[in-house]
Image 1: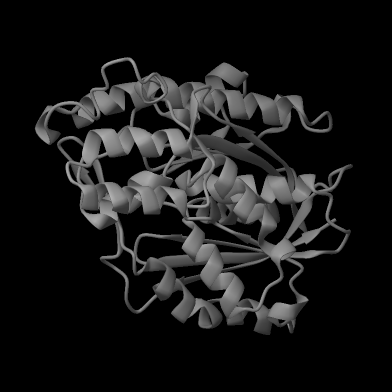
Image 2: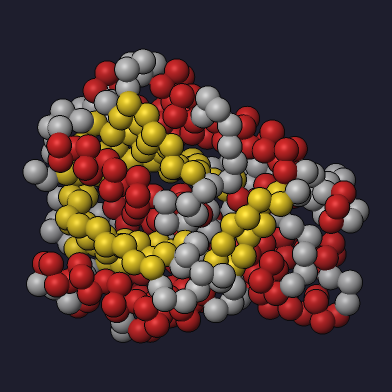
Length: 363
């Protein structure tokens, strides 16, 4: 039974800064010597990012005291204080995105939704965002709900796999997925290279999709297949942990090389299943974890610029929003009106190092 991604909606916090402004803020706050200033200038200037959104208002109002940047590392907001912000701000974004999805689809209303799946790795609370969506969108109390937490940047794929299974097994299933990440809440003052790089790319945002076996009256994606793989190395190169002053993110400079070296063996099962090769893929919806990741994949597979343009544009306008980002890429690609029957290969990467991919067809 065919299953479709009917629509994709996105939301971001109101506050944003240009990458150039953030660069100067970080140089002023973190760089105590010319070498660190030079490293920060190079990282931010070559990030491929023009703008990022954040729920931390102090990052957008330079004249205000910034608790994340002033004082010592031990005096920055505690994990509890950061999570208190998450509970309010994330809940609002989850509901905003869910409302956009239902408002933009006249052929699906709130009474049709049978399952809710929420995704996030940047905070916790219970009752959670799945509960918030049901209560604030007026969904049926009997709606089945699930939350995928702490999986990282690839987590939209397990959510889509769950939705696909629900719809394959129940022709009446309509699944509402919303992912929301507030990565900037976990900014660290640390000045080692890995932390400087992670601080230069992460941002906040929310995205959601409606999935159903009913065909959409407008352009949509038909879900064809998924693939998942763990690389033989990289377990310590991308990871989350919970610290006393936020979540500690490890994003090693080796990640792009690890992805590149494992790329072909990861996507080959998809190609074998459908008797395809990478030249049959029209567009690559790559999770833009950083500019180097897009560069490596584009070079390794000899892709054309337009095939990864949606990933580069998403990175430029929003940065890396963890699990949310690949859905932004898929929305931007659909908004560009790709030809009917175009083959799209989405891909995302996360702790492990995990590589998730899939095949979609534009219908």
